[in-house]
Image 1 (cartoon, rainbow, N blue to C red):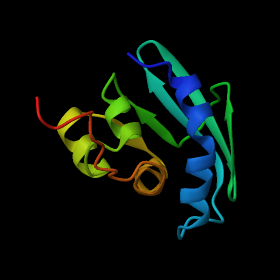
Image 2: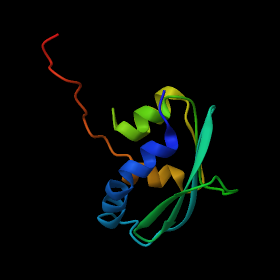
Image 3: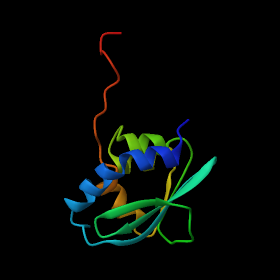
Image 4: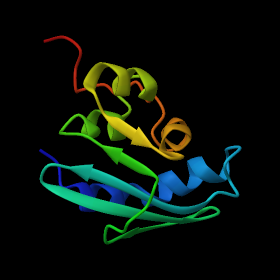
Length: 112
């Protein structure tokens, strides 16, 4: 279980960096991330991102706790969507590749 709003607020500088270094550096609009226990909006103005209250927008990422996998970059974002049933609408399909790329995260010491 993650606090979606707090998590996104903490990683906003990294999200802005990813956007700035991508082909979508001029994108402007709102994106909704929705999970069963909460919704958060990302207001994007070129390379600036603010975490905001959810708004009506055609750009949506909707799913369950698997959205945490997307945010952490556990695997290719498009594979995460395909395997978990996350729903993408509008430009969200393009944005996830930039905002939530595969990061190959590791958990502690590999020798369990």
